[in-house]
Structure formats: structure tokens, C-alpha cells
Image 1 (cartoon, rainbow, N blue to C red):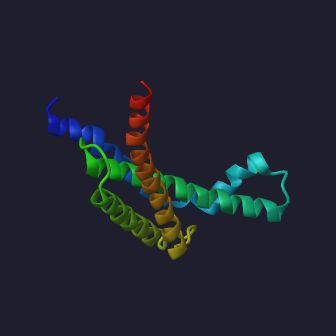
Image 2 (tube, rainbow, N blue to C red):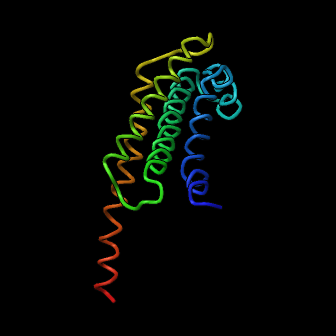
Length: 153
């Protein structure tokens, strides 16, 4: 396998696949009505007001999570085989994910069972920023951990 093909499969393809998954989830099957009926199987015992709040929170956490994964994968795709951290890779990942989030919400405006909200784009971007922050913090800790191990040896 040549290095260009390998880089595509290892770094870019996962980001592209996850982007497709995110965009496909903006259809009717993932509307609040449908996710609520699934959640009702597990939490049907809750009072309606508590259930509605729980459902809302779970849906927003799903936004954070799916876009956090998307941000991680696009950072990784931009970084490729290089090591470390670059604000350029982070900016590219954030910009791409912002475009996906905006496209996702635009698409939802045409799906009768979905609503389109700039608030969801903001939540999506927070998910990306959390992922990028965690990557940055992890990159900072690695050299410190290696130095600590070397000094204790």
C-alpha cells in the first residue's frame, strides 16, 4: 500500500465517513419525536416534565459528542502523519466542522419533523472546541510525562 493511499485510508477516510454519518442523522429518523419514542422505552416511568428535560439534555449531549468526534477526526486528518499540535490544524478542523454544522441545520430546515436552530450550531462548535482543547492538553502533558519518567530513571 503506497503512503498516499495509506494516509487517505487512515486519516482522511474516517473523517469523511463520520461527516456522512453526522449529515445522515439530520433526517426524520433522528427527530425528537423518534428519539423520544426510543427513550420512552427506558424512561417511560418518568413524569412528562422530567422526561422532556432529560430528552432535551440527551439530544444536546449527543450534539456535543458527535461534533467532538468530528472535530477530533478532522484535526487528525489535517495533521496526517505529522506529530504534535498546530493551531492551523485546529482552525481547519473547527472551520470544517462549523460548515458541516451549518449545512446540517440548513438541511433540517427542509425536514418537516426537524427544527433548524443557530443554537445547535453553537452547541456543535462547543463540542468541537472541547475536543480540540482536550487534544491540546494531551499534547502538552506528553512531553512533561516523558521528562518526569526520564528524570526518575
